[in-house]
Image 1 (cartoon, helix red, strand yellow):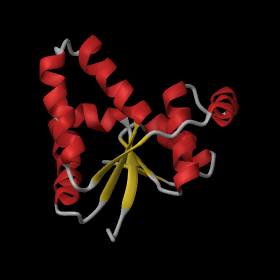
Image 2 (cartoon, rainbow, N blue to C red):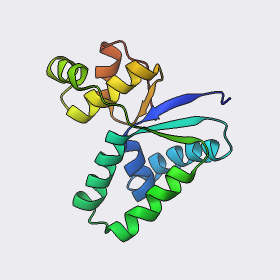
Image 3 (cartoon, one colour):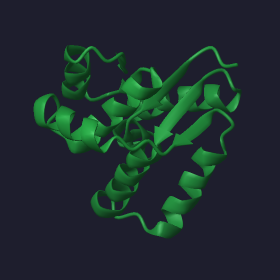
Image 4 (tube, rainbow, N blue to C red):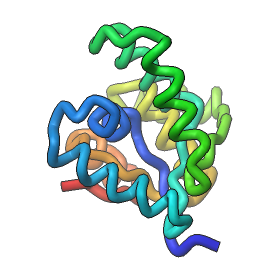
Length: 140
């Protein structure tokens, strides 16, 4: 059993895969290395994967030939678990009331359901999570 399990948002994984902000990339890399040694469990939702692919393709211009190996590397990590959570009614409640971003509301639903915190660099999302009583860690 790992000592720590947490969900991670697409923003953090984008930072890691693109090194757009070296300090952030290094911090996420530390967690991924810990997951490789099964010192923690990083939970990635299918919606986070969808957001990640969208950003890598449409914002950064990566081709699938570059994205697929990166995602395979993440999914082969023994400390990373992909979950397929679907919360259609709850996500619409949260998105309408508590979250500006639909993907953030979906990740918050997963955190509620799985009872794990969300790790993020996104300060507004972090504040929304805290206001809603969902466990979160602001990566700094």
